[in-house]
Image (cartoon, rainbow, N blue to C red; front, side, top):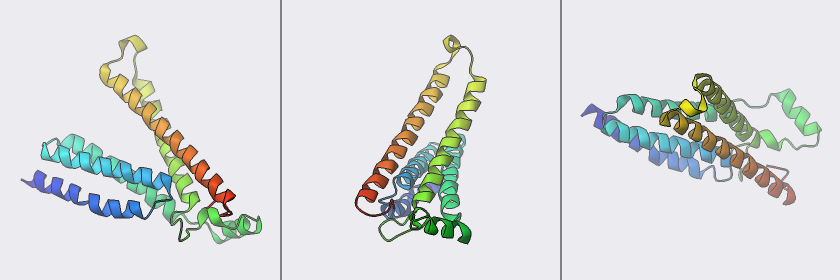
Length: 177
C-alpha cells in the first residue's frame, strides 16, 4: 500500500516537471535533462507499483543527479569580475545572463553538457575496468555498453543543437544568447 502511494507521488511530479520544461523551450540541454528526469520519475513510479524497490531507488538516483546538475549550473553565476571581463571584451555578457527569450543562460547549458559528458566518461571507465574479453561479455554487459553509446550520441546531438541555436541567434543579431 505504501509503495503504491509512493508511486502516485512519483507520478505527481510529472505535471510540475512539464511546466518547468515548457519554460525552457530555447534551452535544448535543460529540456533534455528534464526529459531524462521525467523518464526516470515514470520508471520509478512503475517499479514502485511492481514492488521493485532496488530499481526504483536507482531511478530516483538518476532524478537526483540530474536535478543537481540543473541546480549547480544555474546557481553558479559569474562573479562581478568575470561579468566585467565578458562585457569589456565585447561579448555583451550574454552567455551567463538569462533573458526573457532564453531564461536559461547558455553558460548554464554548457555546464550541464559538461557534467553529462564527465558522467559518461566516468561510467565508461568503470564499466571498462570490469569487462572481460569481448567474446566473454554477457548480454547485460553488452546492453550497458550500447546504452552508454546511445547516451554519448545524445550528448553529441545536444552539442550540435546548441551550436546551431547559437549560430542562428548570432545571425539574427542576438549575440549568441
